[in-house]
Amino acid sequence: MKKENYKNSTYLPPTHQKISIMEDKIVTLKNYDSMVEAMFDQEVLRANHIECFINNEQVVELYPMFADIDEGLKIVVFEKDLEKAQKVLEEYYRSAEKSV
Image (cartoon, rainbow, N blue to C red):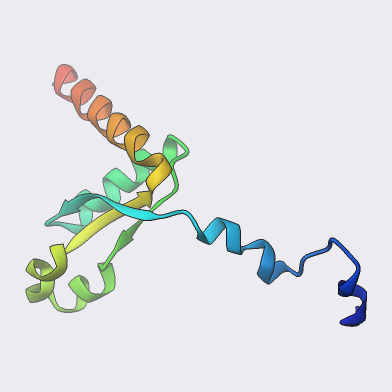
């Protein structure tokens, strides 16, 4: 399509459509000492349809001495999902304790 086609159209190119998604604020859910613990919680959250990712994982894996700087490993979620994510992890660990 030529650029002129966009002038009087309501069509937005894909780059403009993604802007609204990127406006959601990302917040830290929890800090971790171990990659295994972070990955486990990440899988629990994803199984409950909560979008999340591990932040700082590459730096800490390559240079473990940086784990204490900038809170080390952390799972981050969208602010709108923070409360739900906290409840999901609390319920998961509460049920895990009961089954032991």
